Amino acid sequence: MRPARDGLGRRPGYGPLVTIRVACPDAAATQALAGRLAPQLEPGDLILLEGDLGAGKTTFTQGLASALGVGEAVTSPTFVLMNIYRTERFDLAHVDVYRLDRLSEVVDLALPEMIDDGTVVVVEWGERAAAALPADYVHIRLEVDDDGAGRTATLDAVGDRWRRRLEAWEAAA
Image 1 (cartoon, helix red, strand yellow):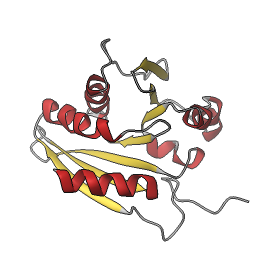
Image 2 (spheres, one colour; image 1 turned 180 degrees about the vertical axis):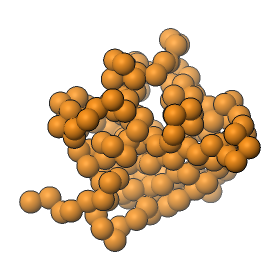
Image 3 (cartoon, one colour; image 1 turned 120 degrees about the vertical axis):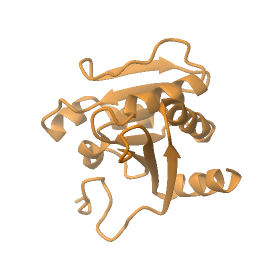
Image 4 (tube, one colour; image 1 turned 90 degrees about the horizontal axis):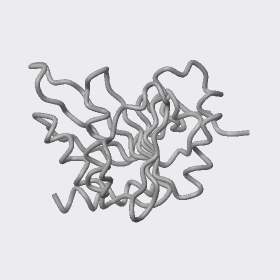
């Protein structure tokens, strides 16, 4: 039997191991943040994106893909559920679970198997899918600032794999 988990797949009492907040005054800054995170990615990584409509989840993924050398346009997979892009190091799956009603539909996408095979998976509306995914990931919450122009990104490392990398990433900034 699996231990109980919260809405983000964490066991009760186990919050994020590292939390970093970054101001993103515009879309270019959101993409730049993703570009700074891209070198930290390893095959089989999981990124869960959270934020309201228009908060910058796809913009973040566009910056990530660009930094990884993806030359094609990266668009929201809201209606197709998943787009896969090839990089030199691994495949990048961009998933949107907004329209899914049941956790079983997330399981049907075979994301855990893709992660096991070395695909880096980025999930928009990731908090909806966390319970069906591995519990070692970086959770990125994008919040629209009060002025409506900028964003604040909060990166939470959940699991040792991401804790070490985010600590090094923050120290190098």
